[in-house]
Image (tube, rainbow, N blue to C red; front, side):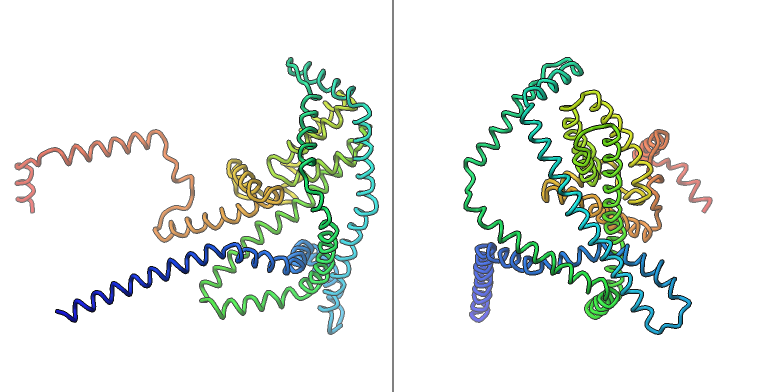
Length: 424
C-alpha cells in the first residue's frame, strides 16, 4: 500500500513537471514570436530574386511553349539534326525574351513618358482652371440628380487630410528610398537571369520535385498533390495570363476611342481603364469614375459618350473578349466573386484583389471535388440539381412524416395481429 501511494505521488509530480515545462516552452515561443517572424521575413527577402524569377518564368511559359512546339519544333521536325530539341528550346527562349524586352522598352521609352506628360498636363490644367472645373461639375451633377453638390468643398477636405498627413510625416524615412530602389532593381535583374534557367530547365526541375515527393510521401498522397497542383495551374496560371492580355486589349481599345472622340489625355484614360479592368466585378467602376471625372472637366457631353462607351465595352468584354482570352467561367457565382475580392483586398490590398478570384476558385474546386468524392462513396448523386426540393416534394415529405407519427402513436389492433399470426 505504501509503494502504491508513493507511485501515485510520483506520477502526479511527473504530470505537474510536464505541464510546467509546456507552459514555459509556450511562454518562450510567444515572447520570441517577433524574432521568428523577423527571421522568416529576412529569409523571404533573401529569396526575392528567386520569387521574381519564378514569376517571370511562369508568365512567359505559355509564350515559350507556343514558340517551342508550334513554331520551331514543327520547322525542324523534318530535319535529321541530332540536337534539335535543345536548339528549339534555345530559339524559343531567345524569341520570348526579345519580345518581352521589346515590350518593356516600348513601355519605358514611349508609353511611360507620354503617360507622365499627360498626368503633368492634366494636373497643371486642373490647378489653373480649378474654380471653373469644379463649378461646371457641380452644375452638371446638380442638373442630373436635382441635388446640390459641392465638389470644391470635397476636394478641399481631401487636400487638408493630405496636408495634415505630410505635416506629421518623418522625412528622414526618405533616405532609405534610394537604397530600396537599388535593391529592387538588383533583385529584378537577378530574377531575370534566374527565370532564364528556370524556363530552360523546367522539365528537369519538375522531375526532381516529383522524384523527391514520391520519395517522401506515399504514392496516393503524391498523386493527390499533383492533381491539386494541376488544378491550381489551370485555375491560376491561365487566368492571370489571360487577364493581362485582356487588360492590354481593353486599354488599347479605350485609348483609340478617346483619341477618335477628341478627348485629351487618351493614354492616361486608357491606362486607368486597362489596369482597373484586371480587378473583377469592381474594376470597371473603380476605373470608370475617375476617367469620367477627367473628361467631365473638359466637356460634359463627351463624358456622357464615355459612360455609354464604358457600358458597351464592359458588355463586349464580359460576353465575348474575356471568355475567349481568359477562358470560361471560374466556376464561382457572383456572390463568391464579391466575397473573394473583399477578403483579398482587405488582407492584401490591390494585389489581393487581383489574385483573389483564381486563388478562391482553386479552394472552391478542391472543396467541390472532396464533397463529390464523398457522395460517390455513398453512391449518391453529385448533381446539385438533384438536391432541389420543389413545393410538391416538400408537401409530400410533410405528409409522409405526419403519417409516420400517426402510425407510431396509434395502438396496434389485436385482431389484425391474430390474423397475421394465423397467416404465418
